[in-house]
Amino acid sequence: MCSFILTSWFFIFAGSMQMPLGNGWAGSEYQAKLEARQQNGQLLILAHGVNNGNMEAQLRYEMQAERTGAAGTSRNTQSGRCRLGAGRDVVVSQLTFSVSPADAYTISLRLLDTQGNEVAADSLQYTGQ
Image (cartoon, rainbow, N blue to C red; front, side, top):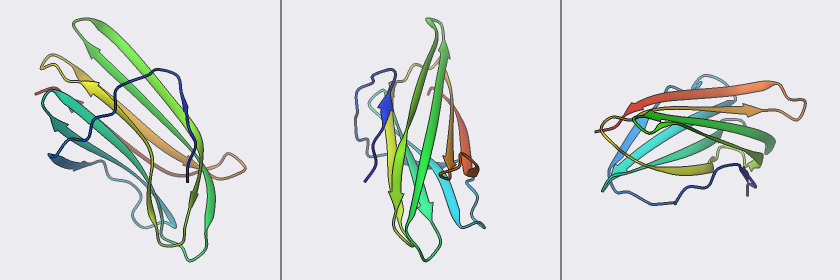
């Protein structure tokens, strides 16, 4: 279960075309993964927190997204707390953009322990198609 604070509001849309992106930190106890799906002019970003350990973890997440295009730049920041069960992959946050061929997107995700130390991170860049 995760809670989040949304500073900019976007429509949530589940697309059927899936493109796993980003590189996460596959060798550590925790992994941050960003996933992008595009369909019908919408780009859905799913932020995953993965607990590769054998004990439940209480973490914080921070996701930042920036869209740059002909209309200017828009920014979105989400943060919250999440509980990751042992061996679980949890979607901790999501957001959706309307995609234009002239737009470029940069998204970053960080997972932090209760002391604020970064334990995993991922980022991706996407160009509208």
